[in-house]
Length: 106
Image 1 (cartoon, rainbow, N blue to C red):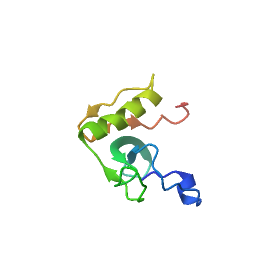
Image 2: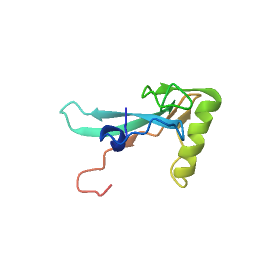
Image 3: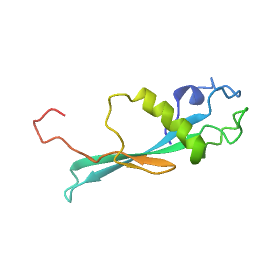
Image 4: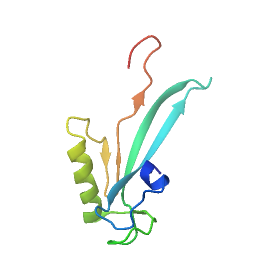
């Protein structure tokens, strides 16, 4: 799970102002000789807490309207970026990104 630094630095706030978040899964691929070949990202819609008003520090994956609320925030902050390749109720898969050829800038 991708977590914010303030939560780990002791500056966490127990009162929930916004419950929406995402959990990122990045799958890295390598060829048979161990050379990096590329990656794919899957985002899961989530809430930062299992409780609505108080942060119990137990994130939960969500679907339905709760997932749509998370996707609205992601879409707002990702304007101009490639759309997901696959979109399901609780997750989005983004296109596989192959590694840049040697000597070619990404």
